[in-house]
Image (cartoon, rainbow, N blue to C red; front, side):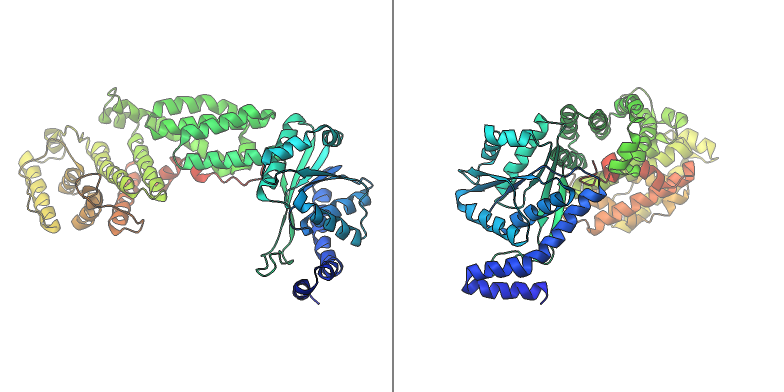
Length: 529
């Protein structure tokens, strides 16, 4: 009979006679499952060259099988290498009988239990009681003399397992030189009739050191906070990890990531100069950590840190315009890539907002990025400041007259109004250039990039922003597939692609990649530590 057929036979027998069903399980099913779990146990210690445990702790619930499996595996391996571990079981008054069933099952596997202790809990759902019991004098002595401990958290209630994990974390802090392994037996699906796991996909999983588990949880949470834009809390989590760890290398990694969260928060609030100066100062400490950071988060994430530094060199020039210490034309003359990197940063913000379902705000960023595409083209290619356009100089450089430029602009404005079904017609060259004005002026100059964007295409995207609840209307975007939003995104990306290629001869994807955040590309796998 195969394992599945034997389990069905066990179920039928269990309905009639529990004692006979137990014997049947021990003789026909348990040996096969125990061999499988033992192979996982043996492989872990053989391949990873880890010292085997001298003490095994296990919680006991209303299922004897997991207790029997971890006990038999630990003892079989111990007998094989000549180092048999001591056993400590944690149960309640209600689950003592299941512990006895587990012990008898181990004996039926011809594995002898030499010594064991039992910790009986008064409350099965009191997490801290397990720690109090394990710290009591008798059990504490047993734990203290064993430098290598294996704690299996399969049996018992979830709170009992959490209590054992909590206790092991405490012991790890009390004895940092000791080794603690946490294990868990993963089962297949539960049988709906008898509420027992179907023995087919059993696997012994080595979770790792309790301190590393806590680190894993905090790192994962901190990265999630960064992705959500909550850089302040992410920085605090990394800082606390740095303070808590005894490893000099890990402390350095966590400290750097804490500072990186602050740097990215500065970027998010457009404090590019502060972000640039801080990252420049922290790159020195990164030299000794970069290989480990690359291993933990991926070498793309490591590379992204240096890309951000290069991007901030350009973005920090733009902040001088924010503060009034420079003008767009001066920045353009000094570092023509600065405005392009700002556009890339705005587009990346919009893309991140879309992932968080914040479509209305994403539309605002796309709108501003598209507007800046046209304005950047005017600044770099035609030396026109959108906030104060010098038409006299423009026509002089292009051998035109003001009247000719005015005629072209008003003609474009009229065609645009007709195409979108509006009556408003401009009568003069604007004193300040909005998105539409910049677009129409570029078309008046016969610029190929503006000519490549049709009137209705531009208008369709612009309405996403103009009639939204946050601007002039009551439209709410609830779907990433919204046609108007997708149109605006597509137009913005195409315009950015074209101006980047024309102005600096680069692929726009390079700038978009350079301004992505660390957490956008970091891939952390729990257990990597």
